[in-house]
Image (cartoon, rainbow, N blue to C red; front, side, top):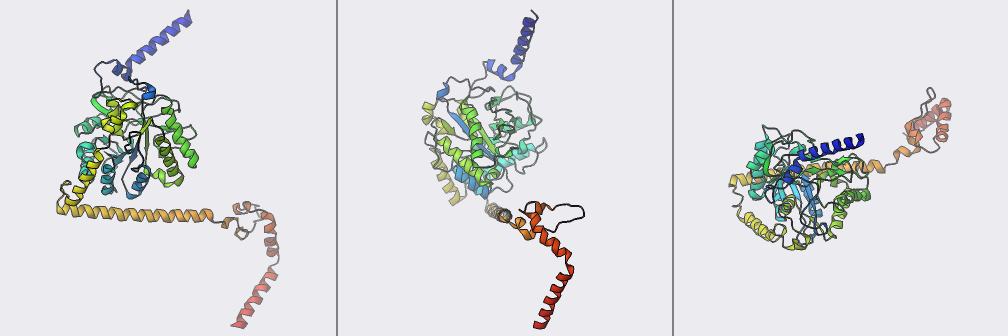
Length: 454
């Protein structure tokens, strides 16, 4: 009887907790309906069979869009890589102003990538600087990058640090559609991940980096930064390039990506986010692993690699696989228009609304940034070459590198430990030390011979 009573109490507590859950409350609310509202959840629960649900994969890259970073992105997201609807794959670039080369911004925009904002200065955000940073960077991307301001709809705070309810409130005022700052940790590969959702019922999950928004922000989207599990499945990685156990080679890096992808693909088909920085690609094995990973996804006819804004457009209007070829938000006819607009801008410069003085200043700033980046690349190349020489060098393992043994305290040199038959090599040194007279005579004889020749 006591056991039954305890179970009843536990079930009652569980029911109360479930009812208090904002996600459950939202789903029970009949007013939250797409496209204006989308409840938080870890199962899609859409009127589409799982087998006819596309597995969405969205890539996000943070920080300045430099020439070095652009080379990686062009390799991985080139025009020949197409989704099953025969449109190019796309990604989202959260771009900060400092060190960004804005001709790259315009180039990726014309290629169909999403251009989003990541602040001007990449400093820690606060209630005193947030509004200006979000407003000015949107203006920079539009004015200097040639991106229509109404198409810049995404924001991510530097260091993934939110500023509470002010963040979604001000972003919505500035015309942003979504924020992608708040984090969610998966502790196991089998843990479920949340979908992007609107903050109509606030942020319902644990607040990893405070302060998180607490109030309701109707119709404003949050795209959680969901962690991955490292290649050993031990620790969570908020960013792909932020794992405590980084993959040591190309096979492990590839398997790391595939394992995390399959934890979505073989279960709920929740949109899978890969959040990272371009620095991960400076190690060739990891760049090759990502290249191979994308190639693997392209062979699957139910996987789409699209940007964050396109992911949201699909959640606002869930469309089955069989109809995605005609799904307007994912079509690519508009890319031709972007190319034509770029040609007009390049010839006339009237679309950028820059005066001659502003244009000249813009060119000078761009050139100075290019020079600074070239200097950094040269310095980085020198460091790599030096490290390569040090790895290839065998000096430490040569016999003449071994110092003589010290007999007073019997401390063996670390260099001697690495040399095969080190004790045998040390014997001549001991004998030489015991015959100083013979050594002195030899030196004296050589010196006399040199004097005679002179």
